[in-house]
Amino acid sequence: MEKINLMTKEEFIGKVGWVFEHSPWIGEKAWERLPLTSREKLLEQMIAIVEESEKSLQLSLLRAHPDLGTRLKLTEASKKEQAGAGLDQLSKKEFAVFTSLNEAYVKKFEFPFIKAVKGQSKDTILSAMKQRVTLNQEEEFAVALQEVYKIAGFRLNDIIL
Image 1 (cartoon, rainbow, N blue to C red):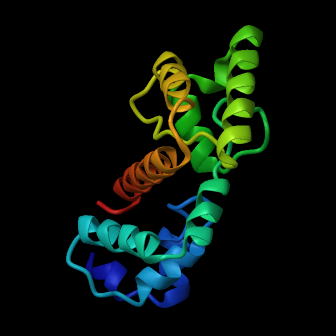
Image 2: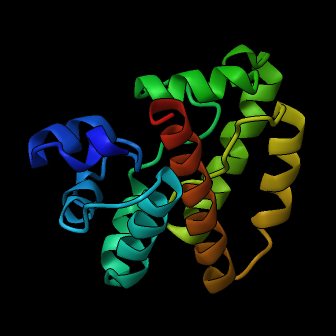
């Protein structure tokens, strides 16, 4: 963490600003809270920044995430995470199911289904999609943010030892 604490704002954003998908504003605000004592404290501060933000910014954060199982262009981190769960190897039938559920989910909640897929399989992800699409807006918004925090935590663990 010593190196992280000594980084310029630009260096810091380059190093950790991407852990929240397409949302470097979180890294910008986190830099202002340095120095921090650990990776866990950094994640706590980044989460606090999101929690303290207006709902419109939180919604933008959720909307910055790709659909799971998509064949569209993904960030390298998302591509690696989805491949680890087998989402890059969906059959045509599985792809159609994921696409249909993603569409129903987005229609209902107005942001993509978000799941921290590390350690998951396409079956556990599909099961979660089927269950979560039944939640109400407020419940799912909270669950989606928790999943975003898990993703950011996994990504920080990969880059800060």
